[in-house]
Length: 509
Image (cartoon, rainbow, N blue to C red; front, top):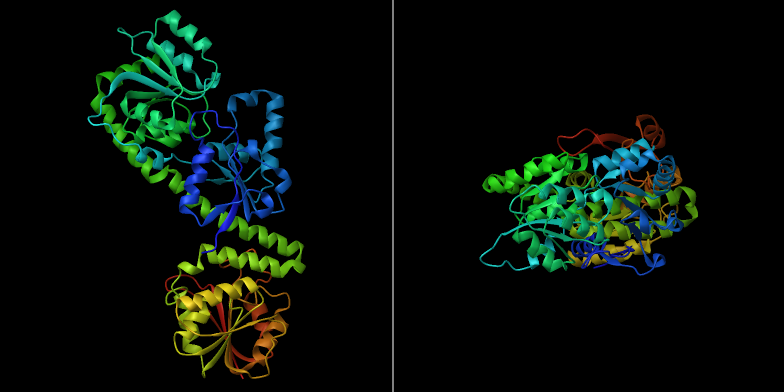
């Protein structure tokens, strides 16, 4: 099966083991019909999972999707940071799509006048599921902190909160950064702290075996450690910040200051069974919303739309590139849709209208694309000729016919100048074509010319199932004018139970 190629650059990983960018990329490649491109020139799309790896020189040259984790809100008090953040936001907005890790980040971008799409990231459940359970599970009397050692992560607040307990509760810290100031603080307060650098496997065991995880961060772009802890059935206490409230909902205990953190620590230690009830809620929340598998599946659809949008913009600017554009679009459509579709049901409501209007034996499928209608019509015993201008589509249509064991003829050419004699086919079917052609009147004239008994066409009404490659928009007035020279009927059709979405035109010879 053909695959699309994604350019997915990574930045330096600070932790031992995989960073989020690498873990997400690996999971994406497991669930998506993509492969990696080493160079942008070989890629169908580029994904920048962090603004630190964004290459603005690629914007406009190929579809580009940028993921943004957010701006540290406290730093907006600095006028220079504020100005730089707005400049960065507008630079990122030049990409085909800009994705926000949370509604908080999306709002920050909105304040900068930049549109984005909310797409939550997730945890690497494949990693956690691959690490065998230790039986029996032994919980250790220790608190776990997993994060970078930087001021806004507020490790010092956790150390201070633990200093009020007698006997002292051990704290285990894993994360990159300068440990010296935290060691000094822990010694002065007589809090036992162990600093380690966990591998991925060691991190999983630590999450499973610690009594709880505390995440006191003042700001988070997404906040993975609490989600990882909940997936490991470990209670979490987190700072009361918007990102945590949005992400964790009622599956965590929240604190505002050091005193509240000490209170919540005591609450968990005294009522561990109650804390475990929150964990059960949280694990379900993670499994249903915040896994890299889910994030990857959502990202596939965004890539699909990004490629379409980019090709549509390119068609508007460079109509002379139409063949290359449609070759790429047919590859996108094939990879994302066609080979998974049974032509017996694909767009069945439109297929039903086509089948009941066919006459004679021979049918020309103009704009046959990847061959879904060619196959569906041929399965009913008609002699079908597939016609399109795309060499890429031809290969896919032939493959689909082979898959469903139907025979058809194949012709390449321009729909404005069909390479057939007058009245060559009993019926000519042109589905979803006249919204794509530069000269629709010429295209319709050719379709009618080569039809012996009947020509059948369909096209979206207005913006229905809008495609960036649509050149024309049809309404009651202009569609009637287009077919005025012919003996015709125009019907509005739709899938059962939905509003009318297509014009269905039958021209009698």
